[in-house]
Image 1: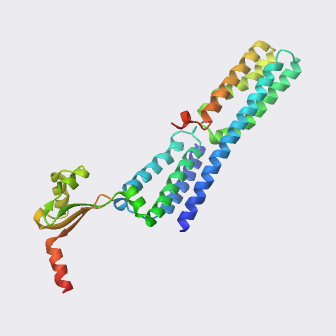
Image 2: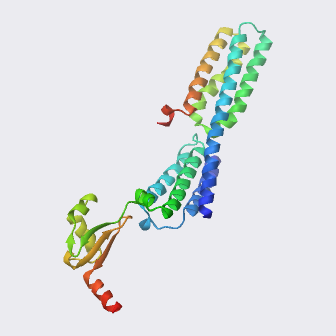
Length: 157
Length: 126
């Protein structure tokens, strides 16, 4: 029991250190790879707690490898747009000037119903009102309405 | 930049540790295996006292190696080997040389399997 307690303390310290090292991002803002790594870290860290026969190093080494690669690749992605595209993908424009780009939706494996559902969550109920709708690399939908565009042009003038 | 340096340092440390620990594990296993082989070879010719002393030396070496092995291997893999090696004491004390030789061979096979499971190889990776 005491062994479990000490392991829990050690792993807690290790996980906190790793989370701090990875930096601040909310779950909704994470790239898919970051989210997967975060989930993997929690799964791997729990292994020595589930089975006393598994050494703590069996969790520590993979954790170090995951977080190190995540940080190094993130840093390299800042310097290289090709690597960034490889790791994170690229944004996909799904609506242009009120018209849905079906091919773009197909690449995202989404239907028009899915898109309309996502638009409704942004309080947009008419596709014709949309100037641009873009699915970002983190899966969020960004919408520019025709009205907003007009207002911005008037402000510039 | 600081994070990247820390990440690189940790990664380097993990890689070096992994290879070094694997090497130390294999060296330990081979060393114990060599001693068990030696015990097996002298089991028919050594005197009773020599046999008991040799057996105790093998058990002591294994118990010492086990302290390190438990840090880097799943304990379940060591349980059977541990039990068999520690049973050698009673067998050598009883004077049953054939059984001692048999157990030594059994231990060598178990150690060989354990060592091959820990070795860096395609089968172990995938």
